[in-house]
Image (cartoon, rainbow, N blue to C red; front, side, top):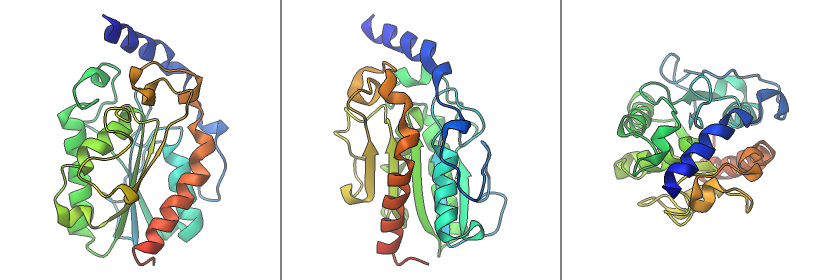
Length: 224
């Protein structure tokens, strides 16, 4: 009953998510849907992102686009391929109640994209991220990848991960230094309760730090 109530709170406050106009502006603008891996040529860096519950497109409208924009600003727009995790990931509220915090179809699609990046673009450096339920998607996907594909992932940023408390702030079966979690003390979602408090809605201010971290991980992986 308590868990059901928490999901209800999550649903009732989803509409309060910050919009794109609140995020920092970079030189290259990115919309809520990006398919530069699946529809484009290989690039030196591939960024795969999963949006939060109820967000539009496949990369969302809050932290996904500016994280992509920050990487493009650092390396050049044509040096980074950004890719959102789309259908069959639906980003529904109800999926948060599942054991992995999302559906198997959702993290299966994320796995497919990681594997695609590895096979289609064997020389690309892969980085990734997710917000809220999208962070749970990334956690479930990355930990299931083969070691050879995991080795090609330089870094992962997780904003307000719904599975943060359950996984002790880490991605199981993945090097801890290659993942960074942003979990505000006032965030009731990544605190383990699935209650959207004010702290869950302010991760746009952490985008610069997330991009800096991914830059460091890309450099550690050999850069471009």
